[in-house]
Amino acid sequence: MLSARKVVQVMHEYHPPLAGRQGLRLDFNENTDGCSPRVLARIRAITAEELARYPEREPVESLVAEYLGLPNEQVLLTNGVDEAIHLLCETYLEPSLEVIVITPTFSMYEIFAEATGATVVRVQSGEDLQFPFEKALQSITPATRLIAIASPNNPTGGVATREQLLTIASAAPYAAVLVDEAYYEFHGKTVLSDVVGQQSLFVARTFSKAYGLAGLRIGILAGPSEQMAMVERVSSPYSVNIVALAALPVALEDAPFVASYVEQVKVGRQRLEQELRKAGIPWWPSEANFVLFRVGEKHREFVAAMRRRGILVRDRSRDPGCYGCVRITVGTQVQMDQCLEALREVLAELKPSAEVRV
Image (tube, rainbow, N blue to C red; front, side, top):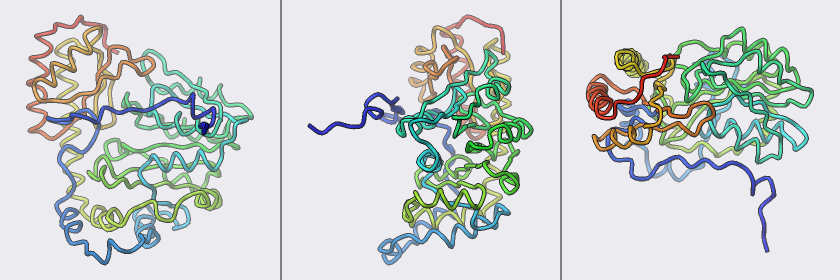
Protein backbone atom coordinates (compact mmCIF):
# COMPACT_ATOMS: atom_id res chain seq x y z
CA MET A 1 0.00 0.00 0.00
CA LEU A 2 1.28 3.46 -0.90
CA SER A 3 2.31 5.50 2.14
CA ALA A 4 3.42 9.09 2.55
CA ARG A 5 6.81 9.76 4.08
CA LYS A 6 6.82 9.48 7.86
CA VAL A 7 7.60 13.17 8.30
CA VAL A 8 4.53 14.03 6.22
CA GLN A 9 2.32 11.71 8.26
CA VAL A 10 3.21 13.44 11.53
CA MET A 11 3.71 17.06 10.41
CA HIS A 12 1.42 19.89 11.50
CA GLU A 13 -1.52 20.86 9.30
CA TYR A 14 -2.83 24.33 8.51
CA HIS A 15 -6.56 24.57 7.96
CA PRO A 16 -7.62 28.22 7.67
CA PRO A 17 -11.40 28.66 8.14
CA LEU A 18 -12.16 29.59 4.54
CA ALA A 19 -15.68 28.19 4.27
CA GLY A 20 -18.78 30.31 4.91
CA ARG A 21 -16.99 33.65 5.09
CA GLN A 22 -20.03 35.87 4.53
CA GLY A 23 -19.91 39.40 5.91
CA LEU A 24 -17.24 42.01 6.54
CA ARG A 25 -14.05 39.96 6.34
CA LEU A 26 -11.83 41.24 9.13
CA ASP A 27 -10.36 37.81 9.84
CA PHE A 28 -7.61 37.17 7.25
CA ASN A 29 -5.61 40.43 7.09
CA GLU A 30 -6.65 40.95 3.47
CA ASN A 31 -7.02 44.34 1.84
CA THR A 32 -10.65 45.06 2.71
CA ASP A 33 -11.15 47.59 -0.11
CA GLY A 34 -9.92 45.54 -3.07
CA CYS A 35 -7.18 46.21 -5.58
CA SER A 36 -6.55 49.39 -7.55
CA PRO A 37 -9.19 50.12 -10.25
CA ARG A 38 -6.29 50.42 -12.69
CA VAL A 39 -5.22 46.87 -11.86
CA LEU A 40 -8.76 45.62 -12.38
CA ALA A 41 -8.89 47.33 -15.79
CA ARG A 42 -5.63 45.65 -16.81
CA ILE A 43 -6.93 42.23 -15.77
CA ARG A 44 -10.12 42.75 -17.75
CA ALA A 45 -8.03 43.64 -20.82
CA ILE A 46 -6.08 40.37 -20.79
CA THR A 47 -6.46 38.64 -24.16
CA ALA A 48 -7.01 35.02 -25.06
CA GLU A 49 -3.58 35.00 -26.66
CA GLU A 50 -1.94 36.11 -23.40
CA LEU A 51 -3.70 33.37 -21.46
CA ALA A 52 -2.57 30.76 -23.97
CA ARG A 53 1.12 31.49 -23.35
CA TYR A 54 3.36 30.23 -20.60
CA PRO A 55 4.10 33.14 -18.25
CA GLU A 56 7.38 35.01 -18.69
CA ARG A 57 8.51 36.07 -15.26
CA GLU A 58 11.84 37.75 -16.05
CA PRO A 59 10.63 41.06 -17.60
CA VAL A 60 8.41 41.76 -14.60
CA GLU A 61 11.17 40.70 -12.23
CA SER A 62 13.39 43.34 -13.78
CA LEU A 63 10.75 46.00 -13.16
CA VAL A 64 10.33 44.87 -9.57
CA ALA A 65 14.09 44.79 -8.97
CA GLU A 66 14.37 48.37 -10.26
CA TYR A 67 11.44 49.36 -8.04
CA LEU A 68 13.21 47.83 -5.02
CA GLY A 69 16.61 49.25 -5.95
CA LEU A 70 18.24 45.82 -6.26
CA PRO A 71 20.10 44.02 -9.07
CA ASN A 72 17.93 41.67 -11.13
CA GLU A 73 19.77 38.58 -9.94
CA GLN A 74 18.83 39.31 -6.33
CA VAL A 75 15.06 39.25 -6.89
CA LEU A 76 12.75 36.30 -7.55
CA LEU A 77 8.99 36.60 -8.05
CA THR A 78 7.16 33.86 -6.18
CA ASN A 79 3.70 32.40 -5.82
CA GLY A 80 3.08 34.41 -2.68
CA VAL A 81 5.36 34.40 0.35
CA ASP A 82 4.37 30.75 0.86
CA GLU A 83 6.44 29.70 -2.14
CA ALA A 84 9.37 31.82 -0.98
CA ILE A 85 9.38 29.95 2.35
CA HIS A 86 9.04 26.60 0.57
CA LEU A 87 11.95 27.36 -1.76
CA LEU A 88 14.28 28.27 1.11
CA CYS A 89 13.36 25.07 2.94
CA GLU A 90 13.96 22.98 -0.18
CA THR A 91 17.26 24.71 -0.91
CA TYR A 92 18.90 24.54 2.52
CA LEU A 93 17.25 21.96 4.79
CA GLU A 94 17.98 18.29 5.43
CA PRO A 95 16.81 15.89 8.18
CA SER A 96 19.98 16.46 10.22
CA LEU A 97 19.52 20.25 10.36
CA GLU A 98 17.52 22.70 12.48
CA VAL A 99 15.11 25.55 11.83
CA ILE A 100 14.46 28.30 14.35
CA VAL A 101 10.89 29.61 14.40
CA ILE A 102 9.70 32.39 16.71
CA THR A 103 6.26 31.54 18.11
CA PRO A 104 3.51 32.52 17.84
CA THR A 105 3.87 33.24 14.13
CA PHE A 106 2.83 32.24 10.60
CA SER A 107 2.20 28.47 10.52
CA MET A 108 3.77 27.77 7.13
CA TYR A 109 7.33 28.18 8.41
CA GLU A 110 6.93 25.04 10.51
CA ILE A 111 4.94 23.12 7.92
CA PHE A 112 7.41 23.54 5.06
CA ALA A 113 10.36 22.91 7.39
CA GLU A 114 8.84 19.75 8.84
CA ALA A 115 8.22 18.41 5.33
CA THR A 116 12.00 18.29 4.75
CA GLY A 117 12.54 16.24 7.91
CA ALA A 118 14.47 19.05 9.60
CA THR A 119 14.04 19.67 13.33
CA VAL A 120 11.95 22.73 14.20
CA VAL A 121 13.27 24.65 17.21
CA ARG A 122 10.47 26.83 18.58
CA VAL A 123 11.50 29.98 20.43
CA GLN A 124 8.50 31.15 22.43
CA SER A 125 7.88 34.86 22.91
CA GLY A 126 7.36 36.04 26.46
CA GLU A 127 4.08 37.19 27.99
CA ASP A 128 4.48 40.54 26.26
CA LEU A 129 4.68 38.68 22.90
CA GLN A 130 7.57 40.89 21.81
CA PHE A 131 10.41 39.54 19.68
CA PRO A 132 12.53 37.31 21.98
CA PHE A 133 15.89 38.49 20.70
CA GLU A 134 18.14 37.02 23.39
CA LYS A 135 16.37 33.66 23.37
CA ALA A 136 16.63 33.52 19.59
CA LEU A 137 20.39 34.21 19.72
CA GLN A 138 20.89 31.51 22.35
CA SER A 139 19.02 28.97 20.21
CA ILE A 140 21.51 29.14 17.32
CA THR A 141 23.65 26.00 16.99
CA PRO A 142 26.01 24.62 14.32
CA ALA A 143 23.00 22.66 13.01
CA THR A 144 20.89 25.81 12.49
CA ARG A 145 20.32 26.24 8.77
CA LEU A 146 17.20 28.46 8.61
CA ILE A 147 15.84 31.16 10.91
CA ALA A 148 12.37 32.50 10.05
CA ILE A 149 11.35 35.88 11.47
CA ALA A 150 8.19 37.76 10.53
CA SER A 151 8.51 41.50 11.12
CA PRO A 152 5.85 42.74 11.64
CA ASN A 153 4.79 39.41 13.08
CA ASN A 154 1.44 37.71 12.61
CA PRO A 155 -0.61 37.42 14.83
CA THR A 156 1.04 39.81 17.30
CA GLY A 157 1.89 42.84 15.14
CA GLY A 158 5.25 43.18 16.89
CA VAL A 159 8.56 43.83 15.13
CA ALA A 160 12.25 43.02 15.37
CA THR A 161 14.65 45.92 14.96
CA ARG A 162 17.16 46.13 12.13
CA GLU A 163 20.00 45.83 14.64
CA GLN A 164 18.50 42.66 16.12
CA LEU A 165 18.01 41.06 12.71
CA LEU A 166 21.52 41.86 11.51
CA THR A 167 23.00 40.60 14.78
CA ILE A 168 21.21 37.29 14.32
CA ALA A 169 22.39 37.05 10.72
CA SER A 170 25.98 37.66 11.83
CA ALA A 171 25.67 35.08 14.62
CA ALA A 172 24.44 32.41 12.19
CA PRO A 173 26.62 32.72 9.06
CA TYR A 174 25.73 29.19 7.93
CA ALA A 175 21.97 29.73 8.23
CA ALA A 176 19.54 31.37 5.85
CA VAL A 177 17.87 34.17 7.81
CA LEU A 178 14.44 34.93 6.35
CA VAL A 179 12.85 38.24 7.29
CA ASP A 180 9.21 38.05 6.24
CA GLU A 181 8.05 41.62 5.57
CA ALA A 182 4.53 40.75 4.41
CA TYR A 183 3.17 43.76 6.34
CA TYR A 184 5.98 46.13 5.40
CA GLU A 185 3.72 48.86 3.96
CA PHE A 186 1.99 49.35 7.33
CA HIS A 187 5.31 49.51 9.21
CA GLY A 188 7.64 51.27 6.79
CA LYS A 189 10.93 49.81 8.06
CA THR A 190 12.91 47.19 6.20
CA VAL A 191 16.22 45.35 5.94
CA LEU A 192 15.87 44.96 2.18
CA SER A 193 18.94 47.07 1.40
CA ASP A 194 21.02 44.89 3.73
CA VAL A 195 20.73 41.80 1.51
CA VAL A 196 23.49 43.34 -0.64
CA GLY A 197 26.08 43.22 2.13
CA GLN A 198 24.95 40.03 3.89
CA GLN A 199 25.70 36.51 2.66
CA SER A 200 22.73 34.77 4.28
CA LEU A 201 19.96 37.37 4.66
CA PHE A 202 16.72 36.99 2.69
CA VAL A 203 13.67 39.25 2.60
CA ALA A 204 10.18 38.19 1.51
CA ARG A 205 7.38 40.56 0.54
CA THR A 206 3.83 40.04 -0.66
CA PHE A 207 1.29 41.96 -2.73
CA SER A 208 -1.58 40.25 -0.91
CA LYS A 209 -1.97 42.82 1.85
CA ALA A 210 -1.67 46.53 1.03
CA TYR A 211 -1.97 45.98 -2.74
CA GLY A 212 -5.12 43.84 -2.54
CA LEU A 213 -3.81 41.03 -4.79
CA ALA A 214 -4.20 38.04 -2.44
CA GLY A 215 -6.20 36.14 -5.05
CA LEU A 216 -3.37 36.42 -7.59
CA ARG A 217 -0.77 34.90 -5.24
CA ILE A 218 2.32 36.94 -6.01
CA GLY A 219 5.26 37.81 -3.80
CA ILE A 220 8.99 38.52 -3.77
CA LEU A 221 12.05 36.79 -2.41
CA ALA A 222 15.24 38.86 -2.33
CA GLY A 223 18.67 37.71 -1.23
CA PRO A 224 22.40 37.54 -2.02
CA SER A 225 23.09 36.88 -5.71
CA GLU A 226 25.01 33.64 -5.26
CA GLN A 227 22.37 32.24 -2.90
CA MET A 228 19.46 33.29 -5.11
CA ALA A 229 21.07 31.33 -7.96
CA MET A 230 20.78 28.21 -5.78
CA VAL A 231 17.19 29.00 -4.80
CA GLU A 232 16.20 29.39 -8.46
CA ARG A 233 17.43 25.86 -9.14
CA VAL A 234 14.54 24.44 -7.13
CA SER A 235 11.92 26.93 -8.32
CA SER A 236 9.47 26.44 -11.17
CA PRO A 237 9.82 28.94 -14.03
CA TYR A 238 6.01 29.07 -14.31
CA SER A 239 4.85 29.34 -10.69
CA VAL A 240 3.70 32.96 -11.13
CA ASN A 241 0.73 33.10 -13.47
CA ILE A 242 0.18 35.42 -16.44
CA VAL A 243 -2.64 37.37 -14.74
CA ALA A 244 -0.45 38.22 -11.76
CA LEU A 245 2.41 39.23 -14.03
CA ALA A 246 0.11 41.51 -16.02
CA ALA A 247 -1.36 43.13 -12.90
CA LEU A 248 1.81 43.69 -10.88
CA PRO A 249 3.43 46.50 -12.94
CA VAL A 250 0.16 48.45 -12.87
CA ALA A 251 -0.15 47.90 -9.11
CA LEU A 252 3.34 49.29 -8.57
CA GLU A 253 2.54 52.33 -10.71
CA ASP A 254 -0.57 53.19 -8.71
CA ALA A 255 1.31 54.23 -5.57
CA PRO A 256 -1.35 56.80 -4.51
CA PHE A 257 -3.96 54.03 -4.25
CA VAL A 258 -1.78 51.97 -1.92
CA ALA A 259 -0.73 55.00 0.12
CA SER A 260 -4.36 56.05 0.64
CA TYR A 261 -5.37 52.59 1.82
CA VAL A 262 -2.39 52.28 4.15
CA GLU A 263 -3.20 55.65 5.73
CA GLN A 264 -6.80 54.58 6.35
CA VAL A 265 -5.55 51.41 8.02
CA LYS A 266 -3.17 53.32 10.29
CA VAL A 267 -5.96 55.65 11.40
CA GLY A 268 -8.33 52.71 11.88
CA ARG A 269 -5.70 50.85 13.89
CA GLN A 270 -5.45 53.76 16.32
CA ARG A 271 -9.23 53.93 16.64
CA LEU A 272 -9.44 50.20 17.42
CA GLU A 273 -6.67 50.42 20.01
CA GLN A 274 -8.35 53.40 21.66
CA GLU A 275 -11.66 51.53 21.82
CA LEU A 276 -10.00 48.53 23.45
CA ARG A 277 -8.21 50.79 25.91
CA LYS A 278 -11.49 52.43 26.95
CA ALA A 279 -13.09 49.00 27.42
CA GLY A 280 -10.21 47.77 29.58
CA ILE A 281 -9.36 45.00 27.12
CA PRO A 282 -5.66 43.98 26.93
CA TRP A 283 -4.14 44.49 23.47
CA TRP A 284 -0.73 44.46 21.82
CA PRO A 285 0.62 47.48 19.91
CA SER A 286 0.70 46.59 16.21
CA GLU A 287 2.74 47.72 13.22
CA ALA A 288 0.59 45.69 10.81
CA ASN A 289 -2.98 45.90 9.50
CA PHE A 290 -4.50 44.10 12.48
CA VAL A 291 -4.68 44.22 16.26
CA LEU A 292 -4.47 41.26 18.64
CA PHE A 293 -6.28 41.51 21.97
CA ARG A 294 -7.28 39.21 24.81
CA VAL A 295 -10.95 38.57 25.45
CA GLY A 296 -10.27 35.71 27.86
CA GLU A 297 -12.53 32.71 28.47
CA LYS A 298 -15.30 34.14 26.27
CA HIS A 299 -13.21 34.24 23.08
CA ARG A 300 -15.48 31.81 21.19
CA GLU A 301 -18.60 33.69 22.23
CA PHE A 302 -16.99 36.94 21.13
CA VAL A 303 -16.19 35.63 17.64
CA ALA A 304 -19.70 34.18 17.27
CA ALA A 305 -21.36 37.40 18.45
CA MET A 306 -19.37 39.48 15.97
CA ARG A 307 -20.32 37.05 13.19
CA ARG A 308 -24.00 37.46 14.03
CA ARG A 309 -23.50 41.16 13.43
CA GLY A 310 -21.97 40.46 10.03
CA ILE A 311 -18.29 40.85 10.99
CA LEU A 312 -15.74 38.06 10.77
CA VAL A 313 -12.81 38.13 13.20
CA ARG A 314 -10.15 35.49 13.93
CA ASP A 315 -9.85 33.45 17.12
CA ARG A 316 -6.12 32.97 17.79
CA SER A 317 -6.44 31.03 21.05
CA ARG A 318 -4.60 28.01 19.63
CA ASP A 319 -1.45 30.01 18.98
CA PRO A 320 1.26 29.46 21.65
CA GLY A 321 0.90 32.12 24.34
CA CYS A 322 -2.34 33.49 22.87
CA TYR A 323 -5.09 31.71 24.80
CA GLY A 324 -8.23 33.86 24.84
CA CYS A 325 -6.92 36.14 22.09
CA VAL A 326 -8.79 37.45 19.06
CA ARG A 327 -7.34 39.29 16.05
CA ILE A 328 -9.21 41.93 14.07
CA THR A 329 -8.04 43.11 10.65
CA VAL A 330 -8.25 46.87 10.24
CA GLY A 331 -10.21 48.16 7.26
CA THR A 332 -11.33 51.46 5.79
CA GLN A 333 -12.93 54.27 7.77
CA VAL A 334 -16.47 53.17 6.90
CA GLN A 335 -15.70 49.55 7.71
CA MET A 336 -14.18 50.48 11.05
CA ASP A 337 -17.27 52.51 11.91
CA GLN A 338 -19.27 49.30 11.48
CA CYS A 339 -16.69 47.20 13.32
CA LEU A 340 -16.37 49.48 16.34
CA GLU A 341 -20.13 49.76 16.74
CA ALA A 342 -20.40 45.97 16.78
CA LEU A 343 -17.41 45.71 19.13
CA ARG A 344 -19.05 47.99 21.69
CA GLU A 345 -22.28 45.98 21.55
CA VAL A 346 -20.53 42.63 21.93
CA LEU A 347 -18.29 43.75 24.79
CA ALA A 348 -21.33 45.13 26.61
CA GLU A 349 -23.21 41.91 25.96
CA LEU A 350 -20.45 39.52 27.06
CA LYS A 351 -18.80 41.70 29.74
CA PRO A 352 -15.47 39.83 29.51
CA SER A 353 -13.35 40.11 32.63
CA ALA A 354 -10.80 42.94 32.42
CA GLU A 355 -7.13 41.96 32.55
CA VAL A 356 -4.01 44.02 32.90
CA ARG A 357 -3.10 45.51 29.51
CA VAL A 358 0.16 44.25 28.05
